[in-house]
Amino acid sequence: MPSRIAALVACLAFAGPAAAEWRTDFIDTPGPVTAIEADAAGLRIAVGQDWYSLAADTARMQPAKPPPGPPLPANALPDGRLAMGQTTIARAWFAAPTARYRHGVLGDAIEAGSLAIERHDGRNGIVTLSANAVFEDLWPRIVKLDGIERIVAIKSYLNSGSAVAIIDANAMAIIAETPPIGRPNAWMNPAGIADYDGDGTVDIAVVRQPHVVGRLELWSWRRQALKKIAEVTDVSNHVIGSRALGMSWTSDFDGDGHPDLAVPSLDRRTLRLIAFTPHVRDIARIAIPARATSNIGSTMFNGRPALVMALEDGRLIIVHD
Image (cartoon, rainbow, N blue to C red; front, side, top):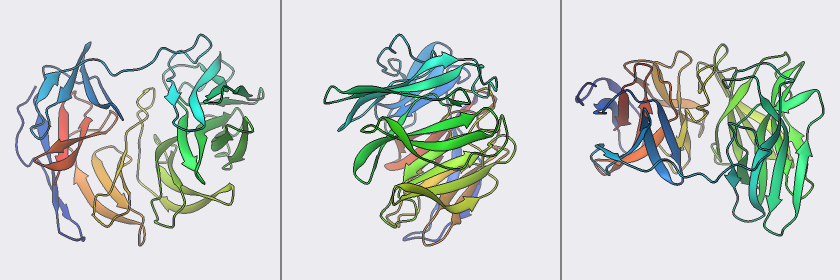
C-alpha cells in the first residue's frame, strides 16, 4: 500500500470561528482495506480477516480485536445486527427473514418481515409487517424522540419503494411514516439523526436512491409526525450490493455548536461537509483520490477529530483540518 503523504488535496476554506483548510492523507495499511466499523466501541478497520485500530493522534495502524457484537437471536435477519437501548428498549433486531421483496440492494434478496423488541421492564413484542412490505434495513436505530426511546427503520413497500418508519416500543407499532418513494426497488438509506437545524427537535437525514438520484432529505420529528424541512442534491451514502450503511458522519465541523453532516457526493469522489443552520450550505467540498466505498469513522489526529474512510482501490485515507 502507498505510504502516507501529506496534503494530497487542498480543500475549500470555510467561514466559522476560525478558518480551516481540509485535506486528505493516506494511512499505511498491511493490505487492501475491506471494511470499516465505527460505533460507540470505537473505530475498527478490516484488512482481509484481520482487524486494526488507529493509535490516537498518529493514525498508525495497530492490531485490534474484531468489533464486539452480541450473537443474534435464532429468528433474526442473518446479516442483521442487534441494537441495544438505554432506557425503555433493552434490545431490538430485525426478524422473520423473507424473500418476498427481491430487490437485493444490500447484497442479497432476503429482507425482514418483522421487528422484535425487548424492553427493560420485561415486556416484549413483535412488529410484523403485512405481506406488501419488508424492513429493507440491517439494524434498528434506537433514538430518543420527545425524550422517549423509539426506533427508526427503513420500510419498503413491494409496489412503492422505501419510507422512513418510526416504531414506538410502548404501542409495539409503527406510529409515523414518510411517504414511500413511489415505485418498486427504490430505496433510501439513513445518513444521520440529530438536531441539525438547531430548533430543538430531532431530525432524520436520509439519502433517497443513493445510487441513481442522490438526494438528501431532512425529516424533522414534530408533533408526533415527520415533516420534510430540507433537501440537498448530489450526495450518496451507499454502494449498491454493500452491507456498509454508515457512509456518513455527524459532527460539528464548523464550530458553531450545531451538528453537521459529512457525506460523499453522488459519484463518491468528493466528501461534502454540510451544515443546516442558519441555512443549508457546504462547509467544505473535499476531493478524494478514488471513490469512497466504506463506512466513515472518526479518530483523533494531531489533537483534533478527523474522518477515516476506505476507497474503491483498498487504500485508507484520513480527512482532517
